[in-house]
Image (cartoon, rainbow, N blue to C red):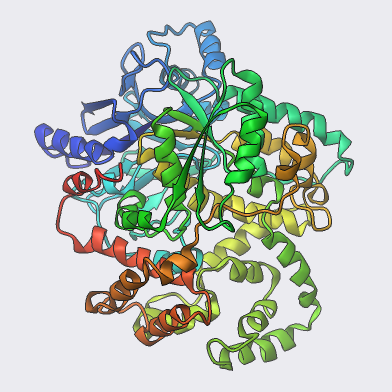
Length: 639
């Protein structure tokens, strides 16, 4: 696991200056790879990396070149089928000098070119400089487990990096705020691909490659979630192969030359991963769980059941409100505004795990793959409102919802059920709905936005690409393309990498995904039971109390903490002149949110948290005149 960075200058700086820039880009993400740094200049091209040594600890240094030096790679991630690929490439006549998975990228590109990405099974973001073709090739894994930012600067240079803060160390990268991205953040709580918070910076979308040659940039998609009409609706036709793929996916991710363990939340997904790990490991699995003093949020009792069943080497940590002191540093680690408060326990369980291991497996992705969120049931139940004539929904119900005062009972519900199915789903998952963003935004900010919402167009575009005719398939695809990479995987990557811990997600193996997307929607959610077929496939592995418990989610008691430990901090931050002079928001509406939450009239914790994290990000990335190298030294306490 590493962090990568680099650039191609159209008008190169002097070599010493270019090396200094590349060094700064890599040093600012040293937390991603504390073991080693490698830098290489090749004409106008500069490649750099930070390494967290996992496989072939003694070897595998990067940047790595092939036999004749014409192909050079920097790589972040793991290739789980590297041994199989290694044998295939040896058969093609390639000579290997290391035992690392990085070397299969070098020789694989030499042999097959850009199409080689289709043979890879793993999580990755990598860059290949092809000297003969004078081409830089970038690739990101299919689901978006590893991040990759890029930009073309005004002088035509391409700059890329694993994290946005590294990109910003290049002097020609612009920092103009993207208003569409800001609106998307306030809608979803994160900035979805391909946007970034800066207008000229983009994220390479999951399952995509990028080629840059002669000053021209081209991106292509090489993989996608492919929902297909089902050949059978019998569970028995899927269970055996599903179980075999789950087992194989976990087994492949146990390869490491360093200590390895697992996150154990107490839910079905992580419990199944731990159970399958235990079948393939000679020693007890090291498991790590966090909990809260507030029982309604703590899952420790369920995690302990699985830990006991498999005799794991179990470790726990209780998260208390005092941990809220790290909120300032969350902005630094995420690079962009990020409003998922479960980043706090994710960081804490990563920190706990890093004291014992270097690699962990997690259960992330199961809800998006198998239909685990209760919001899918809510949307199904509200689908009946689509039978109300459109002229009533749009001509009566929507205007009524806009005329009702903020806080009026039924206002949000009337607006929600007046929308079409995909807009209704977006409204249900929004931090600030379209109805409330009209109240939140200042008039000048509203004028700067396009009339249509980028996120609304994105959701409808994703929904239209699913051809099975199943509403659930459309929602699963939307979440897999937005919430999964933009929130879940971003959170896991940044919080684990903050402590130099590698997190692997076996439920997101692409061969497993290719199989599950062929399973009928009716076998994923049956009646009011979510993830039905997954539960059937692992029912013998998981304690009964865990298997049949209601979904809890990996959250924190943020409504209570905002009104207690964080109350003064949030009110002070959101009402300071510095915040209010930004011009984005109607300050009177922000005051309403603060007042209603503090008095217990309504739970505005998500909204207030998102506004707080936006302001903290703004101060760290736009207001501060310090270099990011200095900022890194200030967050040593969190790391």
